Image: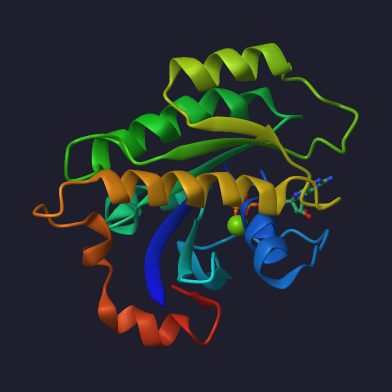
Length: 204
Ligand SMILES: Nc1nc2c(ncn2[C@@H]2O[C@H](COP(=O)(O)OP(=O)(O)OP(=O)(O)O)[C@@H](O)[C@H]2O)c(=O)[nH]1
Ligand SMILES: [Mg+2]
């Protein structure tokens, strides 16, 4: 059995639903109470990808509120993929995805210099006060090198597993095409975090 270790970042403005997304994906639950993330929170999910492959996801849920964003270079280190999320009822959270994507591309890359695979998620699509159109998301996603975009509702459990499957599949494909002589970015994940992460959520 091959086990792939993948560090995946979840980024986007505050209040867009990142922690809810991780909680839904890992624990299958949704809570309508808002608890602001301070810094970063870690979660682990193991996927039985095929008969021969297991994928251990280290999910780094990064705080979106402005006062925490000075630490992103440290948080991004060794990431192999990313979820960039916005809230379809907030045009500023959509516009700021450009900032998040540029911040990622500046601070983390694959050993061959390419950007890490990023998926764009348009969250809270269950709400009627939508202000961001599908056409503008499609254009933004293409213009800025996202592998795909999807509408999600963490509340209604829409497209959560599907979005993560697309991202993991792309990461596996990208990693298998990298030059085996070059160090893989995943190798830089701190081994000491591994045992702590196995126990579930942790915050700093
Ligand atoms: N209606 C609706 N509400 C959602 C959805 N996803 C999250 N929320 C709510 O939006 C609020 C913010 O969610 P969080 O997951 O805490 O947001 P966050 O992006 O982690 O915010 P920071 O930690 O500040 O960066 C909470 O009250 C959630 O219950 C969704 O799909 N639909
Ligand atoms: Mg949060």
